[in-house]
Amino acid sequence: MAKIALITGATSGIGEACAKVFARERYDLILTGRRIDRLETLAAHLREEYNVNVTTLQFDVRNRDEVVKHLESLNDECKKVNVLVNNAGLSLGLEPFQEGSYDDWDTMIDTNIKGLLYVGKVVANWMIANGFGHIINLGSIAGKEVYANGNVYCATKHAVDALNKGMRIDLLPHGIKVTAVHPGAVETEFSEVRFKGDKARAKKVYEGFEPLVADDVAETIWFCASRPAHVNINDILVMPTAQSGGSNIFRK
Ligand code: NDP
Ligand code: 8X3
Image (cartoon, rainbow, N blue to C red; front, side, top):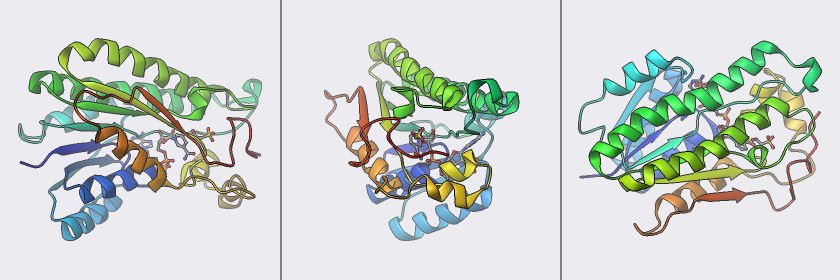
């Protein structure tokens, strides 16, 4: 039987790249996101290209009832998930703390922290029942350092860093691996979302240096997922060579 990877936020960027890498490695996939048309297009491509089974689930990770309902609607075979890539997340706005938007703060906290917890808990309980599994949480350099105007986004990723450690302590007795992958700047739709559709402003973030691409992160995630059973990568920081730390890129 093929192994199974469940990937949240598979409609673009790092999540989509992970779907392609795990399909290449002949994993069956459960892909989630809100933009169902994109999920269906990707699923059709992966079935055709790699002959893997792909199930798509459309839900908003911020909605706890929806998360539980959609995930628990999967059949028992699908719940034998080997790898969860807990990836769905976003940044909104880039303002000094005193000018920040309450709505943006709520959305980031609800998505990056609460969404990761809701999905993580459901899947962790399947993994406990199955006696195996590996949870890979998407952190960030923003979870290791704080940069100007990054205040709340950085706080959510620091929370992911702490939760990753806590999850590992609690799940280790059940034989479940827990890893955090913390990327630096990756050119995806991330900055377009942060700047609310302003493509020109988003593009500027990646000018003058070579950022990571989503594939670089997906291959790092695959490296973590493909270690032997006795090896766990607790935490990995993967940066563009040209970016020495959280503050070393231009964000305006
Ligand atoms: P993208 O914007 O390209 O992808 C984000 C994904 O998250 C999309 O598939 C989106 O799907 C999903 N998502 C966002 N909000 C929700 C929600 N409420 N419910 C369900 N799904 C949601 O960005 P990236 O690929 O770059 O980001 C992926 C992860 O990597 C995030 O956690 C981000 O914080 C992290 N990261 C990104 C870095 C970067 O520089 N790009 C660096 C470090 C970490 P949809 O909109 O269809 O629901
Ligand atoms: C995304 C990378 O440095 O723009 O987490 O916050 S950064």
